[in-house]
Structure formats: C-alpha cells, structure tokens
Image (cartoon, rainbow, N blue to C red; front, side, top):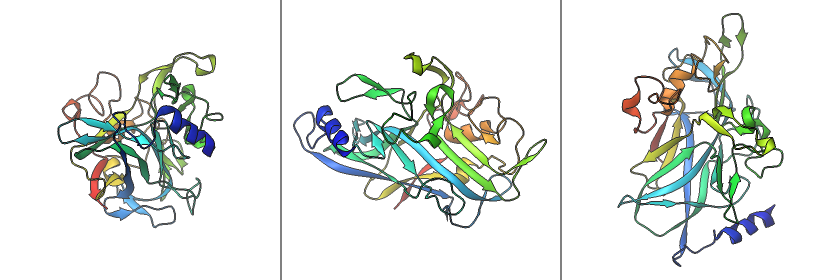
Length: 305
C-alpha cells in the first residue's frame, strides 16, 4: 500500500515542488469536536444536547472533507496537496473522532488533522468542502470516481463499509450517532440511537454498470473561514450548535434522527445548522433560510488550539 501511495505522489506531481518550480511547505489543519466547551469522547461522560438538554453519549463520529485550500490575503485560493495515506486519498480526507472505546462501535484509530503541502504564500484563511466529491483528477489526469464507487475495492479511506451509503454506492459524508439517556421515543416504539447520516440523495444511475450517477440533492457544503491561522487555530465541529434546534430524545417520523431525507421532520433543524438546503432551490436548511446561504455553517467555528 505504501508503494501505491508513493507512486501516486510521483505520478501526480505531488512532491516537494510547486508547479512554478518553487518549494512547497508542510501544512497541518487540525480539527476537533466538542459540545460547546465540553469534551465529547467515547468513554467520556454524557453531555447535554439539543432543545431538551438530553444527556447523551457518543456512538460514532466521522466525516469526510475534500478540496482543502488556504486563502491568501489577496483573495486567491491555494489548494492543499494532500499526503496520500490511510486517511487521505487524492483530494479527500477522513476525520475520525471515535476510538472504539466504551459506547462506540468503530475502531481504535482516530484522525483529527488534514496534512499536505502548499506553495509559499501569505495565507490568512481556510476553506474546505464537506463530503466526498463525485470524482477527482487521478495520477494520469483522468477523473477517478470517488463518491459512487465500491467500498470493497476503493483505496483507504473510501474502503470503510461503515461509511458506505446504501443509495448508489455513495458515502456518508457525516456519520454522527448518539445514545440519548432513555432512548429515542417514537410514535410506536423507543429506539436506542439518534443519528445524523449526511449523504447525497435523489440519485439516478447505477455505478456498477459504469453509469454516470447524478444526484438531485448533492448535500455538499463549503466551510470557509476568512481568518484562520493553521499554526494556532482548529476547526471545531460543535455538537451543541449542530443540535441546537433538535430534540434527540424524540423522533416525529422517518429514521430516528436525520438520514438526509427531505421529508424527515428531524432533517430541517440539522440542515439549517449545516447551512444546507433540504431541496434544490430552497435556502439553506429549507424555505426561508436563503439569507444564510453564504454564511459560515453554524455547526462549525474556529477555536484556538
């Protein structure tokens, strides 16, 4: 596998020199997950979340990002050339905040940073896109299918079955699963897990037949910080803000939580905090939210390391 990554680096030109012949410098963008000021860990205490301040423990917390770039003072964007390793492939990276301990069901390995190289510049900000892109340029320059690909044969980190999205062989862009104390009360029963599974929906085309897959609801979102110092700052996914308008102890229909179905009552508040439209043509988070279209999603903020 290491030889594969090395070959990709050599073939795509992702070495220590920029296209213009100048040297590249190493960059590490740190990420964290909290609930307000409270730490959230698999083996940690319950944290109170949502409109009812329901105590909940973590079951899973992973997300994909892509197209990471640094923002120059003059407004130019410099793409980060990602290291090719078990957490990063082409321009996609997986962030993993769960360690498989206690209430979590993942693996012991965690990853809380995106690493790569960038040309020298006066950088003052950061931008990245949530999710997995449809494709990205490969070593030979041709587009390599990414989101709609077979997780059994895809390279890491796209080979994780738990991050697979059953519709059109896509990926879960965000996989957050919580265990509220007392369970999740539904109309006819109570279940244990409240979930956020964000992914593309309303997709047509069968990737196993080499069809081009098109999705009516791509559900990808740019996160942009006009001010960000990679040596001093972290990108924080704040569960308190993400779930600010959600009741994680109850479910009014559809899956328990939000699995990106536009008609699911629980998806509106979640999409609002992620700055996403429920349907094409709507504002972020549904009708009436268009004023926030260009705003930083409420679920993300910049914090000091």
